[in-house]
Length: 580
Picture 1 (cartoon, rainbow, N blue to C red):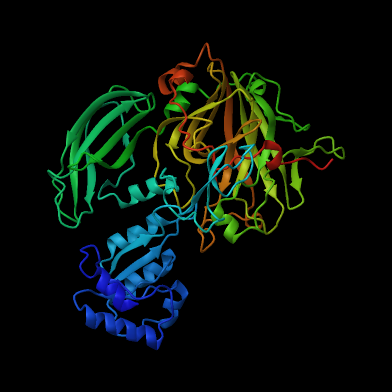
Picture 2 (tube, helix red, strand yellow):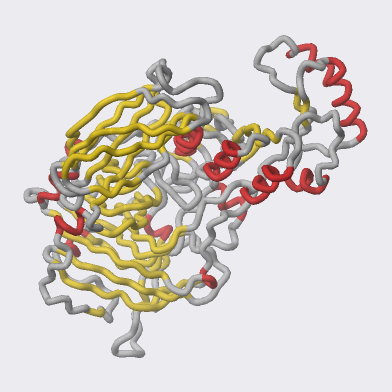
């Protein structure tokens, strides 16, 4: 078999080295096969791809004729060990398994590869989902779990559970968010700065740029188009091609002018890196903050102004206080203690997660002034939710203590089922894709908008400062927080909007997340945010400056109607009613 493969492929320029088997033990016959291939083609190196634990157990006792170490799926700490101890090139012939929405800690693994010469590279498993089209099917309801990809209500691509869902693009070649995660992490030209503290006036700023190409200088090979935005308006722009030698860093000077202090405007400096074919290889954003520490949201919304001199109200009936805000809330405050499990989570931790992950508060008749109590058969938490009345809004402070249990809180916080007419979400924060601990590279801080039907709509967003949820007329709610985690989720009854105090990572097919949140290791689930009523005919000036009118939001991107890992569920299927 080895002889036939070498004879078939020996003249292909793309064959760089020979892989002897795959994840098999290094037996005497495997060694003989490797020696034979080396004799047959001495021009190419060889490797034996090995299971991670098996490779470690050999303790580098691998024959001298093997040119490359090829362990699979090492965690970050193990790859650090290889970087410090391996005396031959290490190529991870498989690493960072892309099962569904997973791909956790790819950035950390790739940074190690970039910075250690004996770590020569790796291959994410894998490029594209494997699936077979199946026609004349019938999907009567999109709000049901599926492990397939439904092109329409009569055509599906069958994935055979998690056997074929390993790609960074779906079987019909639509990118999964992992595609954009890899694009950012692999970018050969990049900026290592994400924030600048400046004041009003003229500034010459220094932009540190890194060249990760092996052979070419960035100058005359990479063009960087930059533009400066104030709120949603572009106020300055330019272009440069930096002199930066391979594997080096350089500094690019830029002159910019801020007409106002960054506490008065949302200033963002955008960079698009293009190669000689005008293909964009990287997009990055530097957030410009005020040297005073004030944020434009605080300054322009005047959050401190209240209608009742700051009196805190504890609602013992577990009801949201009567206000204009309440007119766009169907149910809440609910408690979120999980999320729709991804394929990677189903493969590793099915017993540790809570399936009915939205809980309604239990009403107690035993005490005249009880705290909030949320519980189901596997989880319980109690504590306070306080409200402060604001102009056209309500400030919400919550502090809930979970009872000890072995349950993993995939996401934990306060949630609301919004009015069924609300169909669009705009936000100021990291986007446009969902992000989680260990998987957040694909996003930049900025202004984003999505329709509830978009395939990239669902999921947690990190680093959020404002979220605007409206109907087609522009009526709705504004959520304001400080560097928060906010989840949007579409159900048959409307959008569920959640403010998350805790978020676990997505993990991977071969190991659980490195960022778990367990109920028995969490002292409290606490946070603070505000909700404001939004009148579509009379938007706050800040909203007009930052966001677009609902009719200007791009049409939803819908290349299919339902797919594994972003499938839709009915609201009642994720809600656990209270124990009365």
